[in-house]
Image (tube, rainbow, N blue to C red; front, side):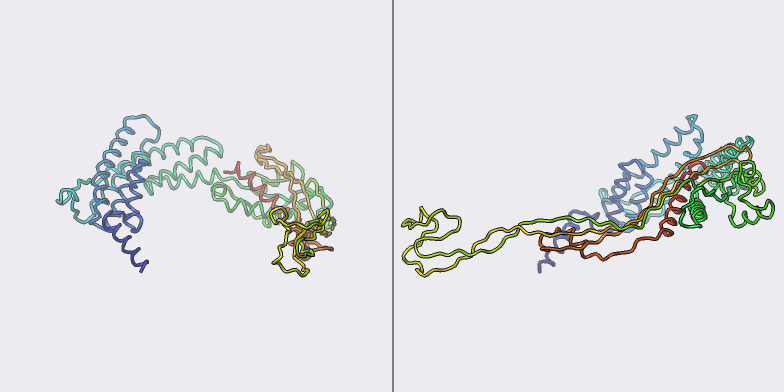
Length: 453
């Protein structure tokens, strides 16, 4: 019965207050439209309220808001177009095309609405709408031309960075007008000229105690994988397959290890047709463990215990009393017993505290591996160092458990958690070194990405 009453109240609130935003899709759309209006996003405001009216073409509040926002949106974007045309801003046609796009969207949306009745006048609403297709197409052509000309300007300049800039400008022109002039061909040419080709050479191992022979391979493969997963890096980057480059180097130059000096690196880069070589060294490594340590801790606590006291008629015997006496007045003696009380001796329960103790033995098995790696990105053409860094990575693994003796009630809850934990094995030295190699690779990729983008 109460649920039915609640539903009736809610329904009445919707009917009489028109508060649809809490219960209906059209109400939520109207709320979104009003929020967009407050932010000055008139395009979104009109499209949201149009969708609301499309769902319920008798939704009075939505219709009233549409009557208000639609002419304001048209006036606002027309004014912004005039301002952009009057100014001297670079690439103003980008904004003009965007504003014409907004005008076309909102006019088309209102034009496709069914006939509506003005809630106030009870008469049909006659909206004025304009087809902005021609104006939009002209603005898109002008915006495409602006970026096409900018692409030509960059393409005339030398250097990889200018080629990258040219490719992006031609692609922008194509985004406005697909197939614009020869922008597609020029974009491909600029993209190729601006692409850098990376070759990762094996790192020289100066650390004798690396617990896995695959450390360098894991590190470099991880770095390559991280870079290849970043579209912003790979747009202008190619990475030579390490297996192919190894085979080519050995066929042309013999042993790679014998060629790892600065002059040979440039020769290798030219052989691989790469622009940038990534080289480096594993400078040092430190492995500790696995080892197990034990610490003993003494725990104490006070607990409440039951005690008994002897009592008889007229007085109460208490161990803390200094003397015994007979009291006639219960108000002066809290242990007074009157004549009506049971005269026979009895025992009464009282409570006290007692200190308890326990010892806990906490065991910890641990292993850690620390490695220092240096890397450099070298421009093959000039031999200059484009990027260099030294990375220090510490990885570790451990497990804890405990044993105890004494009174269990003296232990803390943390102690009990450790006692309930069984001895667990830790990662092996090889596993820990592999994890460390992956972390080095990730950090290396982050550093390289900053100048490859």
